[in-house]
Length: 390
Image 1 (cartoon, rainbow, N blue to C red):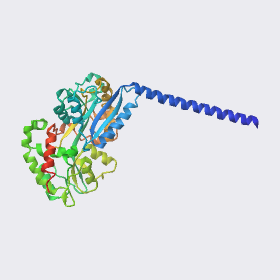
Image 2: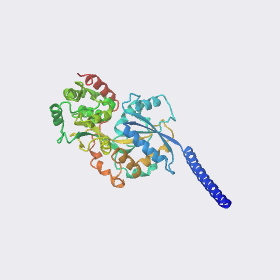
Image 3: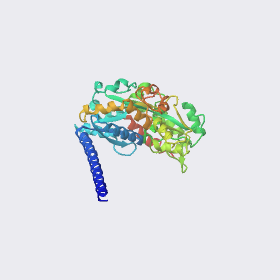
Image 4: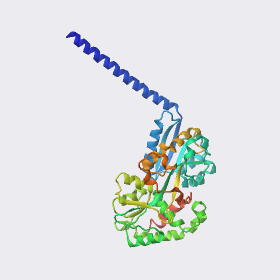
């Protein structure tokens, strides 16, 4: 009996030693991983947008940082659209104009059509020219940026579309005149979010203001075009009484999601919305499967979404590896499956079951409107002339 007890004790002791050794090795491995990360340069990525964009970058950054061969450690600073905080362009411009250097504005993710707003505020030397030879995966990029091509790398495409519930609206209006008539014939069933709180509403207002203006106006920050907005404002006033109401008064939803929520709750039938947000909500079952999307004629605005390297940030060399990852098939798959972003590389290179959901969204047909500092003037006029209407 004593021998059996001794054998049992020896086995238990041996097992304990093995388990302790395994835990110690695991702890040492974890500590080694942390030490390795601490040795890598830190890159701070700044981005702005809706919550789905934040989720995209959190997932992409976690994936990138976990790679043993990642050359940097990326951290995210995210500013939610419509929060009332100082805009990202204002923050970067303030740092630039104050003469700050070596800031943590290492890398910027922004709509390509919005970059002129940054340049207007901070000067033409705000961004560093990209050394494309340090981004091997750039050879796969098919999407061409519409602005500042020497200073940006597109990593996804996005566009505003019309979203509607086909169960209640089987034949949505396709043209400007058809939309006008439908809104009047169906009071309370259409809305758009206030332009200062989200890009979908801003795209709709721009659509009204620039519909009949020459192409050069759509990519100009010259204030002379403000005087040409009159017909657009008159049309927005014309449809105002027929828009969604709450408590007997026209109410414009806050943020892009605010308009989507009204569609989800069946309080409206038709809204302008970001394509990726609609598809994301559909995939999660938040929107009913009867919701569909389409482009008006002329289409609402879309753009490439890009990386740019501010000249006031750290060493630009440290940013290239993450940029290269984001335009790889793996990075593009994360963009596609997280927010249904339109890929910038050939979709056949991406191993994903959902890629057909964005196959019809052709970036070459996007209507690009980039007005920079005029966005602030547009929002101020809208607040005074549209939001105050009874």
